[in-house]
Amino acid sequence: MASRFHYPGRRDLLAVAGAMTMVGTPALSRAAWPDKPVRVVVAFPAGGLADVLMRLLAPPLSEALGQPVIIDNRSGASGNVAALEVVRNGSDGRTFLVNVTTLESVNPLMFERMPVQPALDLQHVALLANTQLFLVTRPTLATDTLAEFVAYAKANPGKLSYGSAGNGTAPHVGGELFKQAAGIAAAHIPYRGAAPAIQGVMAGQVDYALVPGTVFPSVKAGKLKLLAVASRRRPSYAADVSTIEEAGFGKVYVDTPFAVYAPAAMPAVNVARMNQALNRLLVQPAVRARFAEVGGEPLALSPAEVRALVRDEIALFGPIVKALGIRAD
Image 1: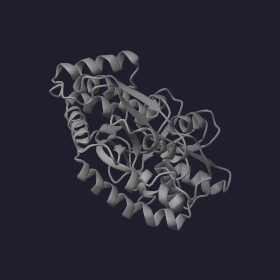
Image 2: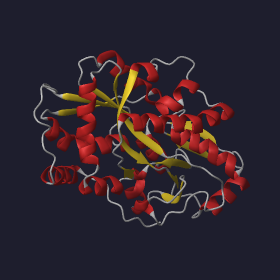
Image 3: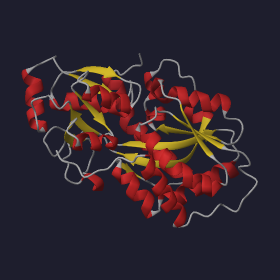
């Protein structure tokens, strides 16, 4: 399937950062905080969607806060590694976490022992973006539509495998939901992040995966086949891609919100300042356009609104995780 999307390179990141600064991101009245560089621990490897989105925001966010914004990638254990790093070493009042919200909705059910207790050890700061997951297959698979793919899977039971960003991640939950809804069998192969999972599909290590919009350039280049989106609706940035439900294979809804967290003890004034700086950026047309190109929908929410979103996700994913018996390695 042809794609009209463009993945940002270094030159693009610099250009959009300049554009966002010019449209008006004033430094927030040079207050006492932050007085040193701000560290953002991202729970995914470089090249993953959360990493790409945060790197798009880092230059204008630095301008707004008046301090450098340093991105620290800490992937592993479905986001627990990054969360533990922030809880253990984030007492300086300027360390934040970018993690998928399944840290709260799935991980406590999947891990027998959690290294952190998200509800007690962390607090919500903002929502970076909501993202959708797309079902892609290796290019050598002899199917071009979702119906053909399901028919092939049923004709070859037990021969297919799918990759995910890790046990208990939204791509894993979505993958199991899709198998159940479509009535197919496939082995699950967990990777450490979406970017390695995408590489796994392209290399033929696995046959398919549910992945974020960072995959669009690879689809355009013919390195992957894009079959459907696992969402309630077609996203505005990919209006030509049918949902799994539209194709007749069940209600597979696994949107993936990326939230910004802080240690529970971080002063409220610091949290409010970071929320304000982020939300001022997230409503800017230049940011929204660039996020759309890599499959992200920015949402400017308050900490209370993020908490409400997570509560809804817990109510949705909790029963699914228990029913499917998803466990950590």
